[in-house]
Length: 274
Image (cartoon, rainbow, N blue to C red; front, side, top):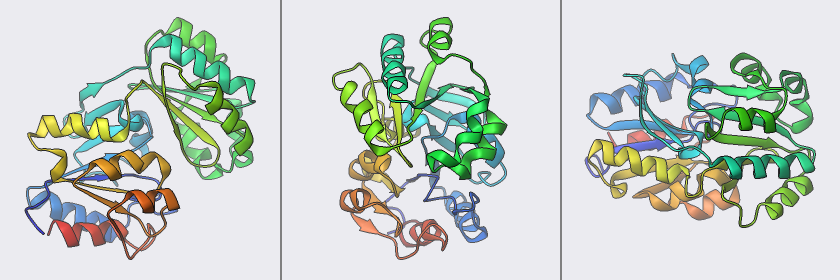
């Protein structure tokens, strides 16, 4: 099917990255061959731009990044933004208040920054997110009070992570945000991801398609999680990883044979681009 598709959009955690949070040699080689063929690659991640810095070497073959669930689209090679969509401040404050009322930890992401109460890094294991402890400590700056931060930095947040300790608490937050002026998505553990209304991974990919002069029908989207559902459904071809959630498997057109630890992304590139 080489030539049918022009862009591959890759979720990171559980898709492009192994469980050890690296890009495997086989996947890196496949990405280089894809670039040499004239096709494009983008990551499509809930991570903020700043959270990509520790992986810059691993991501060298990937030119574009749809970050913060579609809120920020970057050209990594030229270090320029393609599009940026911030959360309306009243919606951001409402979301944080809802999360705090259910005992969550708050992580505010701007176009280029990441902010967290750094004492909360040590609680990552309690959240079931211990694998991110090092990354959180590396990329975040201190934020004492998230509400005050949003008031003093209005309309700067592109994404807010609300890290809950239980699924029940997460469900309460979602219920409290019904009808709020924000987009709500579920992610790893009991996390809730907040972006501006209408901002999702597929909307960010659509902005990138406009930049590249292609259509969504020419996109292969690859993911494993519930925040990948929209891009799996909207792309020309939605590919779920073998390790994907039941919801992602149902949303996709096809599924890889291999999981994220056995080069499922390389398998997809070989099958649909080379």
